[in-house]
Image 1 (cartoon, one colour):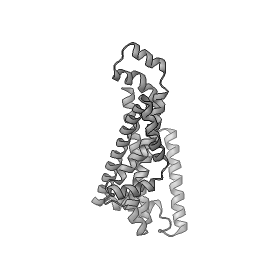
Image 2 (tube, one colour):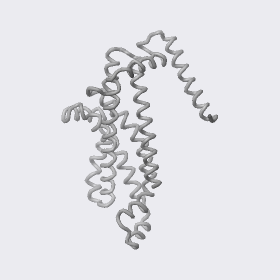
Image 3 (cartoon, one colour):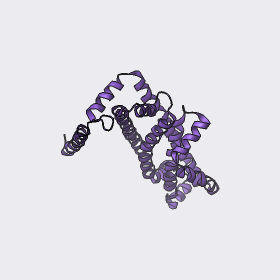
Image 4 (spheres, helix red, strand yellow):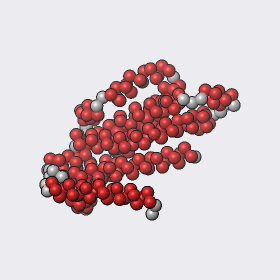
Length: 245
């Protein structure tokens, strides 16, 4: 085990101990449940089928929304780079999506599509503008001389994408995915708290709030944080494999 790993572990232990001591001093599990109580709550929740169904449905819906936003953003960025008129038409909606609060979108989606597809739509809406702007910046930054060389040597469309555009876009899309993957989970679960679809992490958080079960609230939150972290690491690994290939 490296010194850096040990140091990070000790830092985590320090904050957990501080959290536990604070919980003991407050002496009110409703105001502040300690990490031990949260762990017991997580173990208790993990022993029920509803917990795992909620986690599964939330992950599937947010992942679907993330990839939907990713694919649309890349497609629209390519069209905006190729056609100036398309960029001018798409810029106002992108600006609106970036500016409107998530809560407003949540209410609209509930009215239009119901709560069942809420986290998918919200995740896609949050991811789309971030990746669109970054991919478009990468495409615009591609060297004109490289593009001319590709045309001169009659590169196929796929060869141009692989050897000319991808190296220029790679760093932009990597940073966008790192940011948007975490935001997709945060916004998706926040939307579930408002819409309260059945069998979801957001619904579990809401029920913890109305029942004043702070330990359960921390348990659900810990689960959401771990899922967002794992999803981010998975997306980073996939992206690096694709770029390296």
